[in-house]
Structure formats: structure tokens, C-alpha cells
Image 1 (cartoon, rainbow, N blue to C red):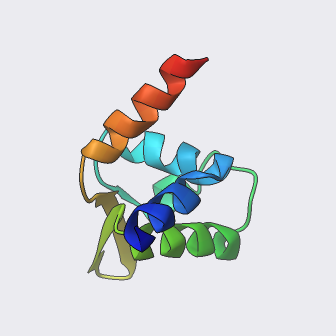
Image 2 (image 1 turned 135 degrees about the vertical axis):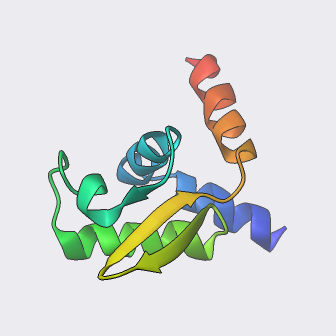
Length: 86
């Protein structure tokens, strides 16, 4: 149950949901994730770390950039189901 709680806690922040929705289209580097957001690079890094620790995101380093992607597309199904509740 702790794993599921960690996932729900990670999904419970509007900025993290925004990050996941951007990554739903495919892998992005931090530079792209930071383009149209109203928070600092360090704040973005904290949110990415939380999502990664919850098992929601994968990351890889290429040169000086970190790239992030969705680890399991089922998380997108969860978000979609939640959006249908509105």
C-alpha cells in the first residue's frame, strides 16, 4: 500500500500533473520542461525527483541534459479517469 500512496501523493500537486501531461507526448529534456512554467529550475528539479522516486518517471542523462519520460503509461490512464470525475 505504501507504493500506491506514494504514487497518489506524487500526483496530488498541480505542477507535477502539468509535468506529466507534457511528458505524455514523449520524452523531454529539462530545458523543454522549464520553457513555459512559472517556477525555478530548482523547483522543477524537486518535482521531477518526487515523480521519479514514486516510479512515475524515468530519466537518462545525455551530455549535460537530463531527459525524462513516463515510466508506465498506466499513470496517464489514472489521470484520465480522474479528469472524467469533473
